[in-house]
Structure formats: structure tokens, C-alpha cells
Image 1 (cartoon, one colour):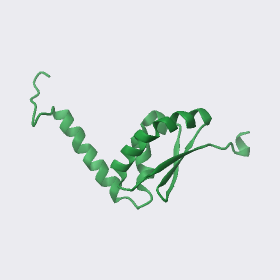
Image 2 (tube, rainbow, N blue to C red):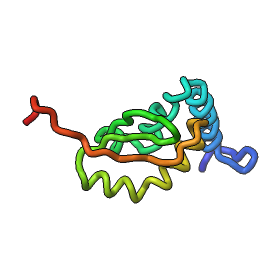
Image 3 (cartoon, rainbow, N blue to C red):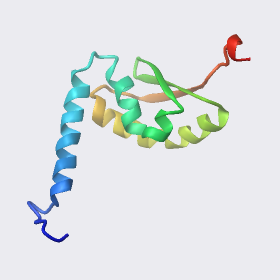
Image 4 (tube, one colour):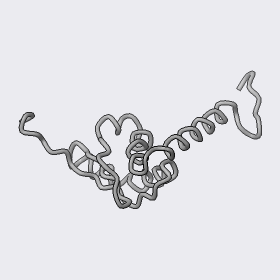
Length: 110
């Protein structure tokens, strides 16, 4: 990278990213005990998934996430181990399981 110097083996943007992640983690860990995983979900899964899903609740180590259909449920279940690792790193809560539940259609939308 022209004009940029490595500091402690990292490029400046890598250092900024690590600093922002530290701020994010500290903020999530200050959230109410059952809200950290809910707030972390969209950050962990990314905007494309976050726009189609919704973290419903967190209780007894289980995060329940609403998904649009069975196809999404199947796909996200395969990614659950990756999501769990990052959620546990970010939220400060011990999350042992993510339950993906298919969104129910309300009578108004039928």
C-alpha cells in the first residue's frame, strides 16, 4: 500500500477494525443480560441475513431467531456453529444453541 506504513505488523485499517470490534464487544457486554445476544445477531449474521430474520428472544442459553421459510431455516442451521462462536465472543453470554423458527403468516397477510 503506497503511503501507508505497517505498525506492529498490521496496516492502519486492520488496527482500526480491531479497535472498532473492541468497542462493539464492550457495548454489547454492557447491554441487559438477555439483550446482548439479540443485539449481536444482526452484526454476527450480516445485513443480508439480518434483513430477512429477527432475533426473538434469549433464554437459558438459547437464542430463538425467526426466519422466513423452511429453506432459510435449513441454510442457517448449517451456519449455526459459526454464528454461535461469534455470538459467544461478542455478547459475553453463554449461548449454547440457536433455534431457527419459521415465521407464521398472520391472518391479515393471507
